[in-house]
Image 1 (cartoon, one colour):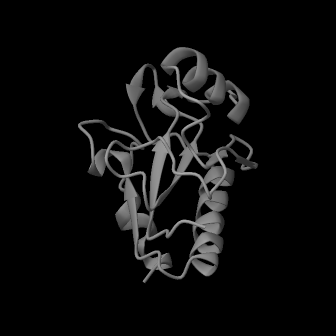
Image 2: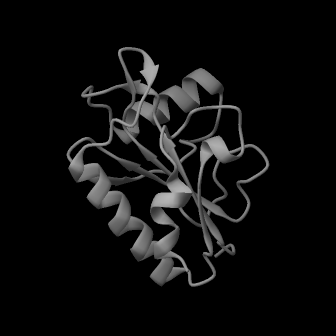
Length: 138
C-alpha cells in the first residue's frame, strides 16, 4: 500500500439536489478526460451513501501535483443556481466526517485534510474543508 498522509475533499461541481453516482463521475473522467479510471477514491452521494471509486492502493487523479500520498473524496453537488455553494446534505456531512475518521484510523500518518481549492484556483469543495475536518486528524 502506498503511504497516505493527507485527505483532499472535492465536490462534483453539479447542481444541488441532482443525484449523480460514482459511475457517472467515472464516465466523465474516462470518456471526457481520457483517464483510465475515476479520479477520486470515494464519492459521497446525496443520501450519504459512500461509494468506492479508484482503489486506495492506486494513486488518485484528483489534485494536480498532490495525488501521490493523498486520498481524494468527492461529495455530489457544489453548485446552487450555477454558482459555487456548499450544498452538502446533512447525510453527506455525517458520512464525510465518518469516512475521514475511519481513514485516519486506517492510516495513522494522515495529518492533514484539505480542500481542492487549497491547491488550485477553484472554489471546490465550496467550503473550508481544512477548518471543518482537521480536528479528526490531529
